[in-house]
Image (cartoon, rainbow, N blue to C red; front, side, top):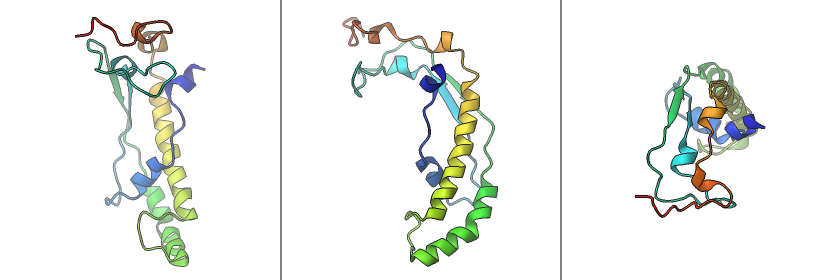
Amino acid sequence: SKEARRLGPLRPGVGKLIANCEDVDPIVLPFYHTGMHRVLPQVPNSRAQAFPPKTGNILRIRVGEPIAVGDLLAAYEEKRAAARVSAGVSDGWCTTAVDEELYDKITERVEAALLHLSTQVDPEVEWQTHPSVLPGGEYFTKNQK
């Protein structure tokens, strides 16, 4: 589906980074960009990217509304502390089951915001594949300067 092509599922590391910010109520500002697949296209059937970057392409960046997570951090503060004491964890980057639950909830909010931004994309205009990466096409063009 076109939606699957726009945005894959986020991983809970997003929530972990946000939850472990030093700020009590961090500001999470989502952004969604299109056009990078033409600037640094992936080589077909590989994880490698064509290099050097392809110039002359249009990038579009949409910035969403700030995502509030302070309520989740406050709601889980005591539960996280108790879980850490119970597990004997003192390192802030070690994870308990309560932490994982919080990370998932934060990640869900970020993902929802990004999915909302993705609905503003016109796939017929913004997802045009760069001719150099089409099957049978030349993905390292000789005319690139």
